[in-house]
Amino acid sequence: KQYDALEATPLAIPRAPGAEPGFLILSNGLVNISSTALMVGKDGVRSPAELKGKTIGVASLGGTFVLETRYVLQKQHGLNTDLRTGEVKFSETPPEATATLLKDGKLDAAVLAQLAFYRLRGSADHRTLVNVTEEFTRLSGHRPVNSVIVTYREKAESKRAALGELQKMLAASRAYLMANKAEVFRDVAQKRGVDQAFLEWIFTVLDLAAGPVSETDVAQITATWEAAKSIGDIQSAPNVKDVIFRP
Image (tube, rainbow, N blue to C red; front, side, top):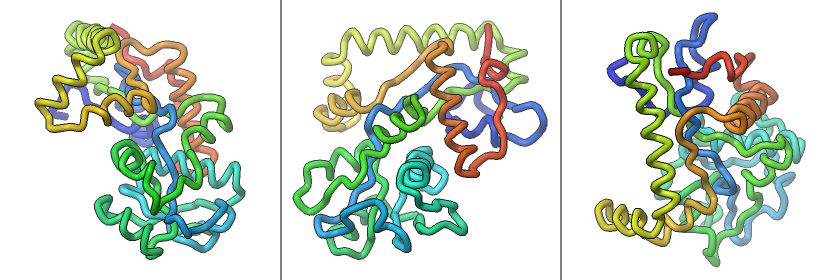
């Protein structure tokens, strides 16, 4: 607990031990619009149903991008996606090797998001089998949340005023970004060595929520938790409104 606030998966709250979650949500974080894709090699499987008995590469089994994919494959395409006993095997695969493994047919499919999806989305050697996030949104009625900003309950008690200011700073930072995208993208690209075109693209497929938690945020986080419950990732979840930080 060396930090006062940190970015975490939204599932950190319902997964926290104890009857009362130890985290409070300061702010929503990354909200996915269409950044997660299930990709295959150009000569790979033609439909999600063909993935039964196959292996899907993922960067991390605990990532929310994997949650999105498992939910869509189970609810829309009828596949058992349990990580231990399911009909599809999910295997952690080094991201730098994924493109070659798909191209050579050594990996049946892969969950790609953000930069990895950006790099392969126009490749002649790869195909998007499912736009996972768009299907998740259609099925659940809300966009999936990939991260939230949380604080600890004891930090909230001891540093309430400062954390309230942090909420305001997050909201102000987002507002500045949205009003000055060209300037911010150019500056970040130069200082961080990032492709400016990627920054321009990523903000068309991801939203960065920041600041006090809104009703829209509550609905999106709730939908993400309900998706996790429906595939057995978590057994229960609190009411989001009961775990919001209030200055």
